[in-house]
Every structure is written in C-alpha cells, then in structure tokens.
Amino acid sequence: MICAGNWKMNMSPAQAEAFARQLVAEVPVTAKDKFVLLPPALLAGTLATELKGSGIAWGGQNCYCELKGAFTGENSPQLLAEMGAQYCLVGHSERRHVFGEPDELLAKKVAALQKVSVTPILCVGETLEDRRANRTQEVIEGQLGAGLRGADSSRPLWIAYEPVWAIGTGLVATPQQVEEAHSILRRVLVSWNAACSVTPILYGGSVKSDNVASLSSLNNVNGFLIGGASLDVREFLRIFQNSAIG
Image (cartoon, rainbow, N blue to C red):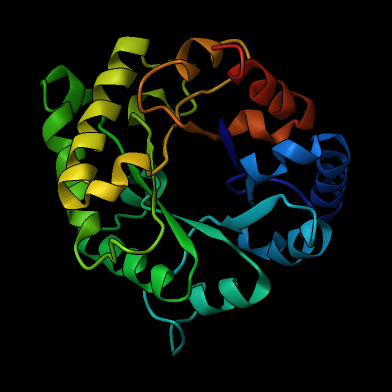
C-alpha cells in the first residue's frame, strides 16, 4: 500500500531532516518505493537532500500551471522536477475550498506537471452537504472528469479520494462509502483510458494506524493520503504496517 504523507503547513527544517533520516533508516529496502513525503515548499530542499538515493520519494503540495514567469509566490512545476520531486498534489480540498481554485485551473496544473514528468496526485471529494444531498457521485465524477481535461493518458497520474467532511475531523468514511467512491472513480478512469485499471487511487480522510486495516482490503484502494498522522514518524510507519493486515 502506498503511504503519502501530506505535511501541510507543518515541520521546521530540523524536524523535517530528523524525520527523513529516521524514515530512511527504518523503512525496509523493499518498501521504500511505497512512501511519498509532501512537505511545505520551503522544506523541499531539505527533503531533496535527505531522501536523495534512498528510494523514498517526495513531492509538492501545490504548483502553478505555468513552468516559469511573473507569478509571484507560486511554485514552478519545472523547478519541482529539477529539484527531484516525483509527485505533486493538485486540488487538495484546502486548495479548492479555502483558496477557491476552480476545476479549470486544476486541469491546467495536471497537464503542466505531466509535461515535466512529475506525477500529479489529483484530489477529489465531496462536502458533508454534498453527501447529505446524495450528490457524492455527481461531485467526484465532475471533479475527476474536469481534472482529466488536457491530461495525457499515456503519462502517470494518481487520484486521491478525500471526503471533505472527513479531513482533520476525526471522522472516517465507512468501508462501504470508500469502496463505492473508489469504484466510481475507477470506472471514470477506465472509460478515459483502459490502462487506468491500475492507476493508484488513494484514500484520505483522518487516516490513522487504528483504522487503516479495515480500508486497505477494499477494492480499488491502493494506498492512503495521510495528513496529521504523517507528522509522527512512528505513527506513519504503523499506518504502513497495519495497511498490510487488511
């Protein structure tokens, strides 16, 4: 199971360095390719140095849709690639709902990342209001379909399903809810490109070591996008270990 840790706006350089060194030391060689760390932009250099040659990947939490130019404060996909990033989140719920990023912009980000061989991790998910109104399928199909516009089906792409109501709330979608959502996403992906039957679909939403086993055995759950629990290296490792139990 893939374990991608989204540190959000947390960690100091010293903390990031210590975390990376411990993770490299404790993850078995055969499992290193299952881990991805997604630090704040200012810590990219730290992780690029500490993880170089380790087999553990890192990536960005966000980027802009242009490779360079007069875009003060934005992160360049090209720069991420040159620093060694292999992945970048696109459309995390906080980017959609806090910063108001629309589907059209997110689709451009997906395409820009693919152009420089950084794998986009496109995030989709419904709000509590959407779920209560039975709009989950409509919302996630729409977000995924929009995100695929302009994407290159021959290049790698990951998807993360993160029900907005379960992020940082302690609430976790039931196994049935997760399986239903991931099945919808798989169907959309395969209809876009039959080869996407193996595209990784991660689940994110208050993932912890004590709930991951019940989710890891579900169809179309290929890993986890982990928020707060990824800030503790021991808990992060326990999540990986327990995901193998499911």
